Amino acid sequence: MASITYKNASCIYPGSDKLAVDSLNLDISDGEFVVLVGPSGSGKSTALRMLAGLEDIDEGHIEIGGKNMVGVPSKDRDIAMVFQNYALYPNKTVAENMGFALKLRGVSADERRKKVEEAAKILDLTEFLDRKPAKLSGGQRQRVAMGRAIVREPQVFCMDEPLSNLDAKLRVQTRTQIAALQRRLGTTTVYVTHDQVEAMTMGDRVAVLRFGKLQQFASPNELYDRPANAFVAGFIGSPAMNLVTLPVAPEGVKIGESVLELERDDLTKLSDAGLSEVTFGIRPEQLEISESDGVEVVVDLVEDLGSEAYVYTHAGSGVELVARCNPRTAPRLADTARLRKNPDGAVHLFHPESGERLN
Image 1: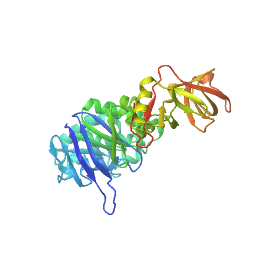
Image 2 (image 1 turned 45 degrees about the horizontal axis):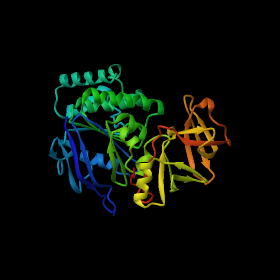
Image 3 (image 1 turned 180 degrees about the vertical axis):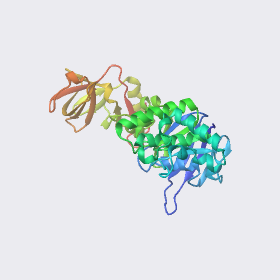
Image 4 (image 1 turned 90 degrees about the vertical axis):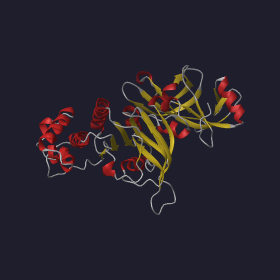
């Protein structure tokens, strides 16, 4: 086990004029589960491959356990990689797949068998040790790939979108198993995904990347409650935060002919910034349907999930808003309704040009 430090680590691919990873700085504690998340092309997989030694570090450096990894071959970094496509040998049994790296190291057959059986017990694979990968389900194959990493007892686990090939139900089940397993083993883990729900439910901390740049590195709760900028606000959360650029009024922000009032501190910050308009954000669960006051909207879609419903609406000015409500009392399609901020709802204000947080 070891801590990991990215210090201004950058990578650029040959023939490109843009950095794939741009001056990344991260401090990952010993035993921590950190998730790198972002849209396609954000640099998250490149950052992981730099850590694993599969991509060159063009500027800055990466440390594992306080040792600079620049120029250190992948095989000497004491890391174990779990890939999206399992990368199992089809002609070998589960036991042989899991113990193959140990065999290459010259570990005795008895010791290999012992370690493989211990890992199989942890992963509930004992009854499958003599099967070939073709006779396993997708989830079982992924657990075999995990077992191959576990038997090596590395300092660091590197996982590159390991659940992408699984169906929705199996993904939920397997991500729970991976998170529980990591906490049991206590091995420092860097996990890459494009799925923000996966990131929020698995990571001790989450690093959000965009165009190779780190946007925010924080706990899931902090990312959700206090996003550093409009990109993080819109990326984290499902459904996404309502984000609209609105004119600033003396009492708040204008949506069509209505004014959504803001707290005095927020109004002061907008005044100090000298803004005539602002990017206004509010989570769907912090909007509620009102009988009399609030913003008048027309219902475009009601998404009934059984335990809750999401109402997709638009205001007269073309502003689109999503609100969460009780499915038993949800309005119908094409109904006119009113939305207001609930008493405990938090409002997020961002600069309309830079996207940086204002409040």
